[in-house]
Image 1 (tube, helix red, strand yellow):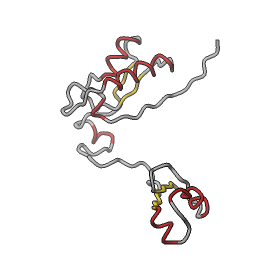
Image 2 (cartoon, one colour):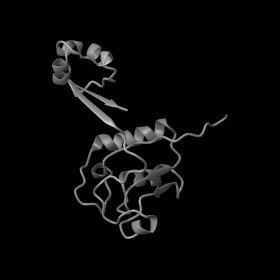
Image 3 (cartoon, rainbow, N blue to C red):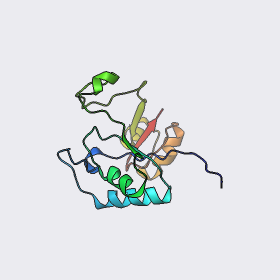
Length: 145
């Protein structure tokens, strides 16, 4: 049997990771179930997680229960170690690598004002007319260049 290597990425908020040394966690049983199902269905054999040295986390405990020892790594250095990697010790702002994407926001009101749209029901047609990718966000149209 040939195995194709791949990486599965699950992005989540830190508050649901269940890091024992982190204040303000939110227990979400659906997150726990999601992790268990993901590990089983994707046949995950190693977990890398950003936990800032505040674990153990739910994912770390799951790795210890279902995988050989050493198949979990917290890849997010603790605050005291961050300067060694050129990362600010305290940062509540995103640490951008490369240029941020350009985001264009066009509301249904803007479309009507410009004459490019009729009622909200035809917002998709109006978006196509002005070459804006439409994501279903109620009456607004968002595009990422």
